[in-house]
Image 1 (cartoon, rainbow, N blue to C red):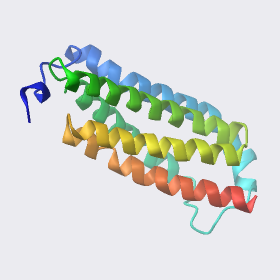
Image 2 (image 1 turned 180 degrees about the vertical axis):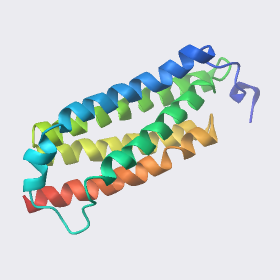
Image 3 (image 1 turned 45 degrees about the vertical axis):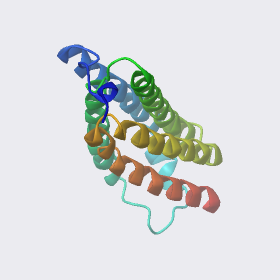
Length: 171
């Protein structure tokens, strides 16, 4: 580790840093909740699904845990701002990719549940998975725990890609 990799100080003071980590994740959660709404009972329960489709109660439980881990990961990454130089630019890239995967996360639920565009939702999910994996890779340099916190998220989205693709194929 060089001097350029040593964190100078957190990017934000404690309370704004906490807000910067929680608010984007809360926004993604709200978009997801608004998009699923009545679509679970009125649409999702009526389409064909594979035998490995989890019961509906698993999804909010899994996402609550994952969103908490995502917010903690972002909080840690925001606290790992390196000193000036190439490492600082790489840190900004890690934050930008983090934001991109969150944006894709926010997009998937409306595409799948509200628009019922299963094929497009699969494209969004695969892009999200790629961005999550890239976020893990970029974050590793600055905070190993921030990167590791995203591994279960990548695993769940991998499963979601398989599920989404199978549902698309079945319907």
